[in-house]
Image (tube, rainbow, N blue to C red; front, side, top):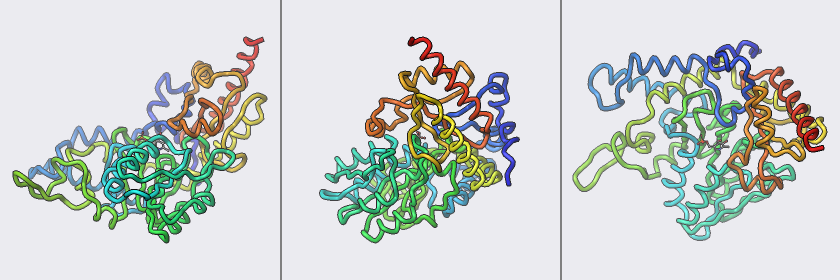
Length: 408
Ligand code: PLP
């Protein structure tokens, strides 16, 4: 069993004068970075910095080797092969890569993209635009009463015209248990459809094996899993990547260029035009190693335990509404205080050293389905503890008292 009590000490920001008093509960937006990741970035720039692929000198060869080793590490973390891992800027960039390189070429009039109103805008708007461009249409999985996407509903919504299923494995708002991607992929494949998984909230918090879950594409962001910003991944099944044409053109992705035409490298390089995020990839690989050291099953259990504790304790505070499922849940808890705007709650909690997010969480259709304009969201990660939950609940109670006192 991993002992999580010492984990916080690995995160320098949380040990600064300001950080020592911080209760950081916004990891679903971005995670803090452990010292080993900061050190990997520094080490690369300090000792190995050169552009990749092009240089013949030793330093450039070292930078290229470090970059490709990072790809191997990240691939192993998700159960993929290295040539199936495309480095992108993040989840948004990864989803857009499929929307441009696959959807616009593969979809036509009458084809359907099955998605949901609970998606992050990053996994909705690219499909709205691709559907418009291809003459295809969006269909939406019926949401459960708590707003969540349930596997059974997805299986029931698949139809003969479904060509793509684009869904998050884990919600950034509700904290419901993850989608059974394996079941969805197998059913979709039987109908000739493919599956893209938004893994922005699952890859950082759950053990994910992309081959075992048989998805065609999985998108995720480095910064939400303790890695740097500016780096993310599009995992693509090898046959899919081989069949897709690149959509961004430039250096690094070509194999031969004439004045009037060019040929391209194989995947993943054909989707990585221009100088890639080299240091960021190396930092992300170090984050994967750090998380593997903790053990992803243990990270998942830890985050879940804190999420369940927070949801049940907040649910007992009079006037607090907790969204999402009761009982078993992941480490994301959205809630509202009766009669108090979520932004005021977040500001009041900030005054007590608690960082939570308030807003629509890039999920405006879901907010409408929940009948609210915004929620407060607390999200937990490996450096959080039960003490953080206690502090959150106590501060929510005092915020409630304060605003109701002011109101009367
Ligand atoms: N999808 C989900 C479920 C998310 O939570 C997020 C980030 O909040 C994204 C996509 C977009 O990630 P990024 O902004 O890193 O591209």
